[in-house]
Length: 319
Image (cartoon, rainbow, N blue to C red; front, side, top):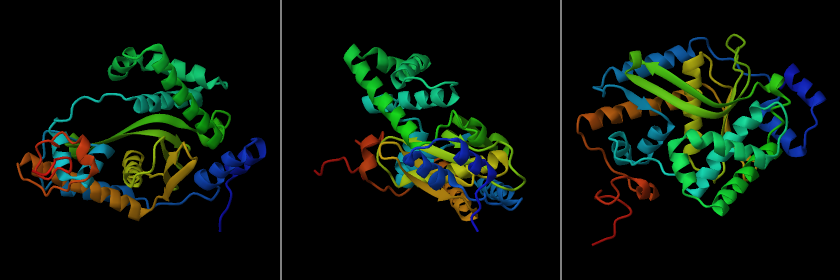
């Protein structure tokens, strides 16, 4: 039977929510009792990944994040090229810069003590991001009008976040929000490192025994991609390995529409994520040994470093 937690009841009684915010609170954050996990579920997953990794000859230190796993799922050639360092440095576009500004503004919004004007927050975000070399190079090449367009786009995204999510600043005690949360897990003494940065995590840092207490959310401004669900399963595994208990739910929140793609975490979800990590370890070992994997061309060939030379590239014109 679904039971509203005391925390949720307090929030419903004390907060004035819009219909959209209440929908997010009840449908995404959830009002049901949180699930329990077997005490050894994470230990078994760690042991399984490490046992599989021992069977391969690995590079000095193998770093895996959601991007690597997505590259492998798309095409082993893309995974190999990126792992070999063939992808150039990241360069911001107008869309990615506005997204980065919005993420930083949301971070400032959640951490702040009082409500501030959205444009003021994104302007402060631009100042803070001046320490990021890639962003600074992009920002310095814009004229005043172009900067204003970026700032307005970011401010709009912040307003969409405010209209969709319950007021996290006022509900800090109940929801315990954290933003831009970097998580790292070392396996086999650091031979394999799993890492990721979560946009938003809700929930107490003090799990109730084996009861899950966290919700992990990735914030997106574009359209939904199939890989987003796999990304969040990886984050569920990452949080479980790091803290001993996985989150009760993971979700991608699409700010443009206020819709989300959510999945309740169970052992099946964690096993699936562990399988992807093991496949990535196998792929890295094969690449290090010089073995060629089957290539699977697709629209992602456009941003592959080997798109002009790969015999299977979808971007090459027929002779």
